[in-house]
Length: 570
Image (tube, rainbow, N blue to C red):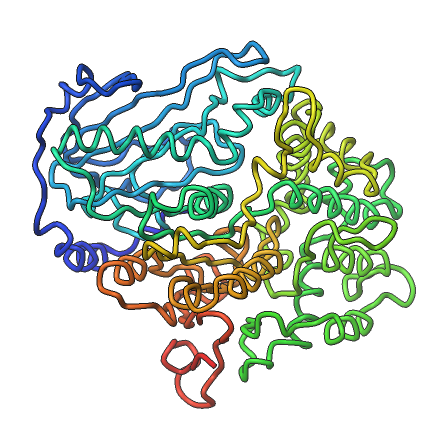
């Protein structure tokens, strides 16, 4: 999740507001350097060093790129270590590596920062949560981890490059869920050794693959955390990868009309930014006013149906040749296919479709689906989704060479009547299928809710890779199974217009983690979150309430339409 740095005044206010958490700061028991020699059973501490307060290290950026100021980190002990070092069945050397930062002024709490994509990176362990200040700056001990494989050490160009870990059954299980408990156990040992006591409260925050990790924790390891905040969770990762292939095929159908041989570049050119602007305006004409206000946002999540949208599309369907004022029949069909979701030849649904929303075609949206309009960056569906389905989610795993061209060829060659079998099959050295290892769709939250755990799920209405419809399907079923306990202990917030984790025509900046802490520690259950649009949105500074499911934000009919107070949740 991106760190949206605020103004200095707001940053100071937030730090002051969080000072209560630091009022009983714990001092070190075992010195930082001594951790490298502490008896921590099966843990190996690679390094333990004390860092003075100062700016966080940032990755090198090309010259001329404007970067926000680096966040200031407090004085802390930085620990890097590993557990479960081994040689895999594929001959690769594996370990679960973790990165832990322990502030000098500890607030007695633990924060696990989720991963992303195919993981394989150690993470910075600074506690990114979408807004400032960082968890580390608030006094939390912060953990990140690589999920049991390393993108450099385990890179194999003959087995999908960074996705080669999918050929090892344990590496795959660690990626799906098993490394989470192992990393938390390691972190808690180090925390206890350093401070002389275990954390009072434990929190997890993650988006995308990190969101999948959060749901895996509450489903498989329910006693580890008190509060879990997940955004855009990839709870159905293997099926979502089928959806990525389906969407590539859908946009390929549109791009094939008069654009020459099918390539990632031609798919990118199948829709111009102007074409998507036409489609968005049609969706808004059909659905914008459902919440009581025409404002360029569709707040009535779930109510913008094809019955409303398709007549608006038909009104801009090209009658002759393609012009800048119309969409071709092939383009409209492609959009319908994405909305409907992948199916086999008998109509069996393989993954949820993507609901109509005002964020379709926004920069982040098209980056996943088609790539940039100029064709310079191909779609992430081809670059990441194809190889993940082949190497990590399927049995037996299949190597797809890195690159968009190989990803496109793989996705176009998939048989939708047989692809489900790939993710559900066990065999060879794989005692579990890709679906069993990596999905996080169990609706049984008895253990988590039973010990008082609290779960907050957020999802963008225009997420282009993990469908909000899929997450809502799971959430509804989870409510039915867990009843009153789930209604007390879980919340779902849709973020209209938001793309994957952030971006889009959306109010995508909100304090979900603060609400979670208040819920866990002060018993204040959140019914709405105040969200604001960032400077890159079409309406910077706009406010909207995010309403707890099943309520949506509706305009009161009076008041400043740019302020959240002018909306009610109903």
